[in-house]
Length: 258
Image 1 (spheres, rainbow, N blue to C red):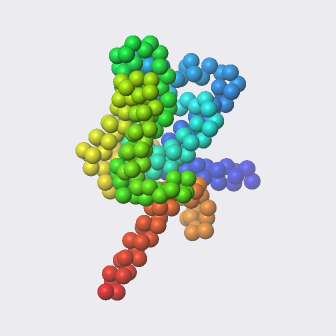
Image 2 (tube, helix red, strand yellow; image 1 turned 60 degrees about the horizontal axis):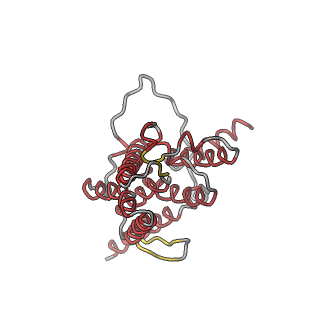
Image 3 (cartoon, helix red, strand yellow; image 1 turned 90 degrees about the vertical axis):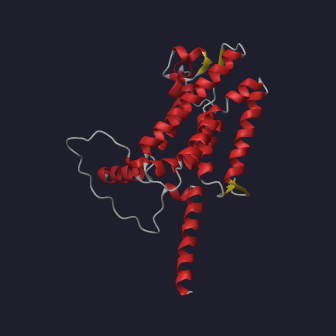
């Protein structure tokens, strides 16, 4: 009985092909709980520009720190929807590299901005690297309609513009230099997507890696039935993609009849 439950739990975890996104959400939940119990998570993992440059691991750990339950709720949902979609498309390895680079660029840019205006310690929110992921997804799917909170329809390209304006004005209230510095990650994400031509190219899941001498023998996964429920069914982006594939399939039949 226990082995059966473990097998189901492991299958549910592996289903969807976005393990890194799941781990990032879990670690953010763990840091929130640790902070509630007075653990010095902020002192170990958060990034304060430019002071934390002396502890370089913080350049990559600050997106994993959440200290506010409401903020974590929205952060987790956005990471699940947009980050999970990108990880499935690119593969976990390239997705991890991209997210790490966005975190580095954002932290270094904010450090340069803070140093320019003479700020010794300025906390960087974990939302900024996630914003770069959202920009990448929106630029790859600019005409895709998204419904905010399931009600307000908006094209992905306008969502990206709104994200950029929101970030700029939030940080520009403190100083315009910080507003511009906060957008460096988004700018790098936009430039990379526009110049690398990632549309419909399944290249990144097959990036070179070291070959293992002995590969693990994995048991075949049981086939998924149409009426089986999974966490992916709750993702509105997956429902939009499924509806788009259905329309394309229907057009094929209409063209054959003509």
